[in-house]
Image (cartoon, rainbow, N blue to C red; front, side, top):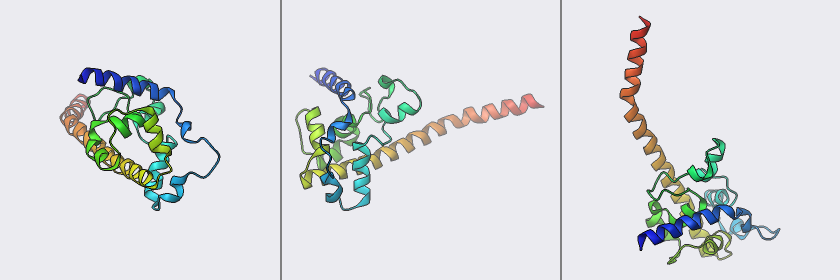
Length: 170
């Protein structure tokens, strides 16, 4: 059962990457979330996901020419692309936050994903923005921890390299 779920999640992730994020903007009007979200921080986080100006691997991998299929989520073991869809509805790293802020769905779908990000319902907009903000903070903290751990692992290697260079120079 779990393997069927993972295959389904991977398929949904692939399909989501083929559907442009511009689906959120279906008419030329001011989006309701802009006046519903009263704090700049909530608006900023919601806008970042809606306009693809965030730090998820699906976007940052473009800057390093990383193939799309290799832009994996570093925070879970699902071995899938870290897309907006994965971030908002699937990644187990955010399950607790998701239970607090995102209404429960038995199965994450693209329609539900689009509904969350283009909703006109005040409670849905506020809760989705809070989820995005807190999950982004959680992600940033986890990435910093990952980098610190990586640097700590490299210290002996770096010290050895410096020693070797110093010895070779004399």
